[in-house]
Length: 271
Image (cartoon, rainbow, N blue to C red):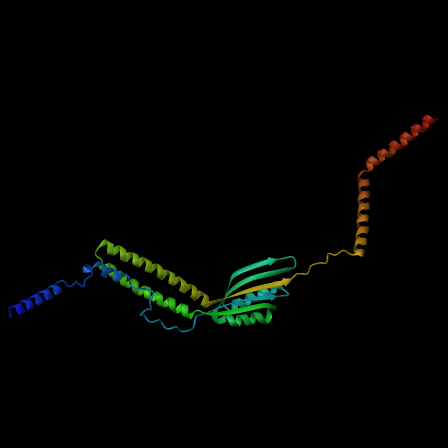
């Protein structure tokens, strides 16, 4: 009987000690492993935050068209007019002049909803199409994934800011601040990617090459032309010779007088 009482007393004593040594739930009493567990929340798993509904698919449209035209400047002016009507703008505009052709290299940004109609107008009345390529890329899944990850990062950022308010030691504060810095970098990166996708979706990109041929004169020699040029060159040489003689008339008169003077003296000596 005494042994049973002793066993019961020991049991209650051990149970009481375990309750007394249970950890406090406040942040200041967290053990080190508890803090590490709190700080190492995985950010790459599926988010508990549901994605925001998408009103429409995110489609990026791009294309290129190469045109051969008769009047380069008129065709360029026509494209300017269509682009203005479509509320688009030039991203790049280059002009090239070659021996046998002149050309424009254009990169246009057109609102997505006006892209198809713009291409139709270009095909109708600008020039002869030498090549054409149109692509449409659906980036809805990528956009949604970036949006979910951004929402996750923002939620985790808020959680870590709350943890930072409760941190007591310098070590805990520094560790949480480092986590916050990394999350903020991820947030800025995802915001930049979403902004890039929004721009590509909102404005489609179209490259246009306009080329016009320039008539090159035939430089091959012809017999009749060569004969005519020879007469022309001979006449020019004779004219140049006459002009030289006219320029030298004082010297010619002196030579003429000297010649007759010497001749007259020779005749006198012979007599």
